[in-house]
Each structure stands twice: as structure tokens, then as C-alpha cells.
Length: 268
Ligand code: ATP
Image 1 (cartoon, rainbow, N blue to C red):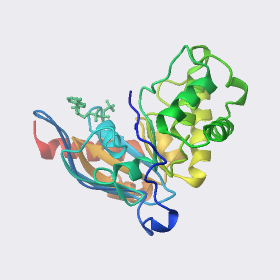
Image 2: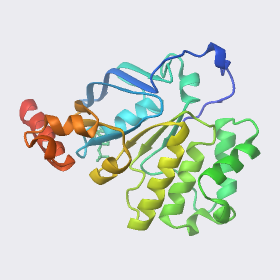
Image 3: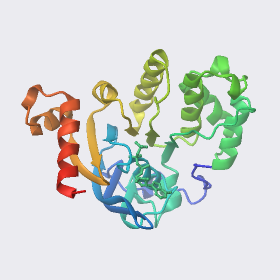
């Protein structure tokens, strides 16, 4: 299962022992090699606490691989990742306690009821006072009416809400969401986006998406990947100013231009 299986309460340092003034997520010289395939090649970027940042890129650009490494699900081949100041390799427990992950295919069990599933995930995370944590997640994700229903009978939009509720059970300060609105109908997209915006009020969020309008609607900044590298980073205005079409360029123009440039530079 794509989840971070650690006891989130053990070794959790007191707030006073935590680093201060640190980035929500910091990625430095990140590399991931799968045999001969270089999925991520020396990627570096930072996300400040409280930001919503969109991770954009073509299929196979390295977004999911990067997100899985940030969440401690996959070890990096090289490079350093810190979450809320904790190194995901050397201080995995502390870092993982601060990050919630919604994978592209959220591992839900259709035969379980919503509350039952959240209880299962809370046990897996080792969450103390699971009952209170479940109530809080159910409330924040608008699942009260659905909480006794079988997951398999829920709409895709509600299943995403369950995935988000599971991701915030241990009250992480950073959320990593892999294509959270993919496969949803337009109304469900609007609802899940609204929920993500609500969850961002007290969290740092990194989300990947192929929907450029989503980035324009909810993200403060963009990190654009192409062929395993970060080819551009900044707010939309900054990215537009880098485009040949100038300040009037659409995000789509910028995306296509910068991605094509990366392919040209890298060769066949
Ligand atoms: P998409 O938008 O299609 O989800 P992505 O940007 O998330 O793409 P990744 O899934 O990170 O891209 O994949 C990056 C590259 O690494 C691709 O070439 C992919 O085939 C390869 N890759 C990913 N996981 C593995 C794996 N477990 N073994 C071998 N190659 C892998």
C-alpha cells in the first residue's frame, strides 16, 4: 500500500525542539534511477510554509516519483529532501509525521465503511486518540453524511474526500496530492478543489495536475518538470514573463514552450 507506515507518535519531538524558519518542503539535487531509467535528474525546489504549489509536467516527467520520495515511500538515489526541516532519509519518522499523501490511486477498500476505513488508517499511522482524529477528518472533509456508507458505493468525488480525510488523520502540516481531481466530473472537481483550498488554510500543499486551469485557480506558484528536471519555477506572472509571447501568454503557452525547449536541449 502507498502509505507511510510509521508510528507517528513515537520519537515525535516537542515543538520547542523543532527547527524554526524552515521551508515546508525543500528538495536539493534529487535523483531517482530505476535501473537504466533516470526518472528524476537533479531536481531542486523549495515550498514555503502555507503555499499551494502546483507540480506540472508531461506524462513521465517525474512528478509522481518526486512526490513519492518527498513522502518517504520511495528512497532517493541521491539528493536531500526535508519536510518541515526534517530530512526524509535521516529523520524519516519526524518527516513522515509531518506529511500526508494522497496517491494517484488512493488505496481505498470498497467493502469497508468510511469510518471503519479511517479507523484502520489511524491504527496504521499509530495516531493517538484515533476517535477524535477521525471525527476531525470527517468534519473537515465534509464526510459526515457518508461516514457510515460503504466506500464502494460512494461517488468518485466522495472517494477522493475519503482519501483526503485519511491523508490528514495524523494532522500533517504538509500535504502532497497526486492528481487529486483526475477522473472526477466537473462538479466533483469544483468540490474537491474547494476542499483542497480549505485544507490549505493551515497547511503547505504540493499538488500535481495536468489541468492548467486548476493551477491558475488555486496555486500560488508552479514547479514545472520536464524529463526529470525542474525547467521553470515561480508564480504565474514570472512564468508568463519568461514566455516568448510575453505577459499576455496563457499558462498553456508557457507550459508548451518551456517543455519543448527542455526536449530540444536534451536531444532524442
Ligand atoms: P504521469 O503524469 O504520467 O503520472 P509522472 O510525471 O508522474 O507521469 P513518473 O510516474 O514519476 O512521471 O515517471 C517518471 C519516469 O520514471 C517514467 O519514465 C516512468 O516510466 C519511470 N518510472 C516510474 N516508476 C518506475 C518504476 N517503478 N520502475 C521503472 N521505471 C519507473
